Amino acid sequence: MSINDLIQEGNLNLCKAIRRIDWTRLSESEDQEKTLKSFLSKRIKGGIRRAIDKNRGDIRIPEHKLNEIRKDNGKDHKMVAMFFNSMFLSIDEKPKDDEESMIYQIADKSEPYNIGLLNIYLTGLLKKHLDDREYDVLRLSYGLDCEKHSANKIAEILNIEGSSAYVR
Image 1 (tube, rainbow, N blue to C red):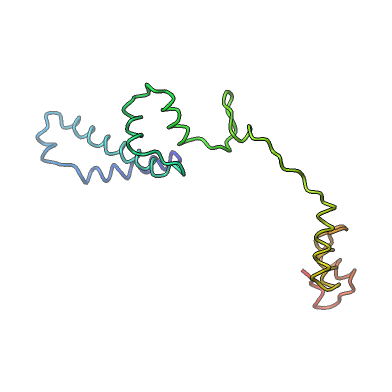
Image 2 (image 1 turned 30 degrees about the vertical axis):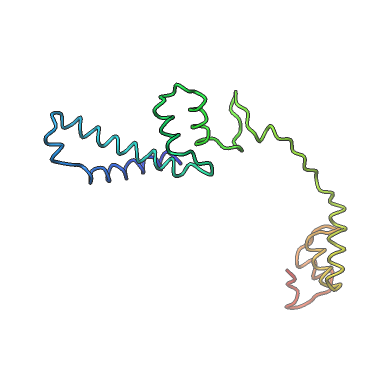
């Protein structure tokens, strides 16, 4: 979630909290301002937390574990790090100065395509399933075993005239 989403959730939950204020209880309070601020801040924070939890991603941490982390107040640094990393980091994100990312630890074992072999395979398929003219149009159009040509150049090479000169 972006910061704008969080602000919007806060505003939405402020509106919801105002609708739920118990005015009689507030008027009986000794410090009305403190009571109102406390009530509204709890509602706003709770709404933002629920929105973050809901939009967290594929891996969902159970509500009781999230509450355990929040009550811990950061004493268990490993658990807090796991919580925030699951919320804000991506496996594809570039590593920061002292971090390492999974994407950079996995070796790329893919090999480059052999273009010549691929061209031979494709031209063989085209010859098998198309007539000579269709084969030549596609071969010249996509540059299989030759350079790519424009539609007009293909029409000129294959002696196609008139309204049928539009070959693509």
